[in-house]
Amino acid sequence: MNIEIHQTEKTRIAEVISDEVLIKNPEEGLQLLADLYYQNFDKIILKEQNICAEFFDLKSGIAGEILQKFSNYRMPLAIVGDFSKYQSKSIKDFIYESNKGKLVNFVGSREEAIAKFI
Picture 1 (cartoon, rainbow, N blue to C red):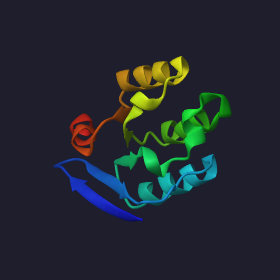
Picture 2: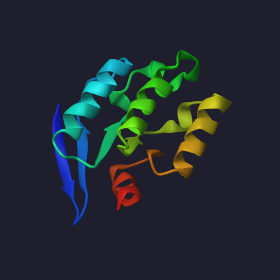
Picture 3: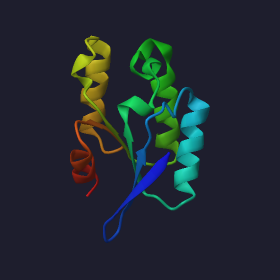
C-alpha cells in the first residue's frame, strides 16, 4: 500500500494506492482510518477495489459499521469506482443519499474526489 498526498492550502488528502483488498471487516477499516488520522490527514480517497465486496451488500452491515467509524472521527471519505454495476435499489439509494452529504461520497474518479474535498 502506498499513500499519494494531495495538499491544498488547508487540507491534506491521503489517496490510498493498492491492488489489494485492504478493508475486509470493520476492524481493518478502523485501522486504516486510525493510521491515516494519526498521520494528520484530513480526508481519504479509497478505491472500490480496496474494499471487500460484502461492503456493497448492505444486508451484511459492514458498510454501516465501517462508515460509522469514519463518522465518529469526522474523517471525510471518497470511494472511487464504477458503481453502476450494483443493481440493488438499496445500494443505489445509499450511494445517492451519501453523495448528498459531505462525509462519504461515491465518485467516478480521483479528480472528482479531490474536487469534492476542495
